[in-house]
Image (cartoon, rainbow, N blue to C red; front, side, top):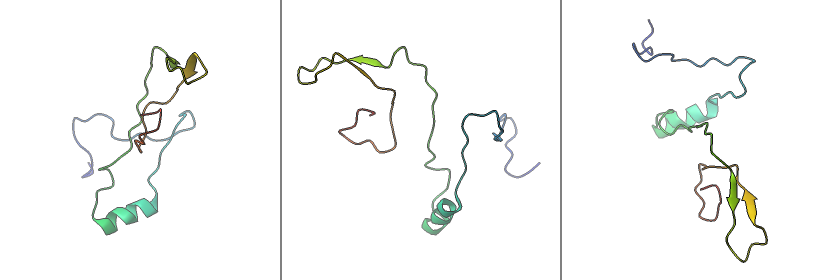
Length: 87
């Protein structure tokens, strides 16, 4: 067993194959940055959560917007801008 293997933690690798829709990889320049700054590479990892909402159509109740409904497929991001509809 390798030192990185944690007994009892289930699958510890998610190997990419041609049937997966999404894949991810860690870039070398990011790892170099983490090493220089003394940060752990996995500490601030982006999380992708697959959600199944009841609807992504929103009723617009503001009188200054000229539509009755809007479609918003986004839920959250890494930036958190105050003006953004994805917050």
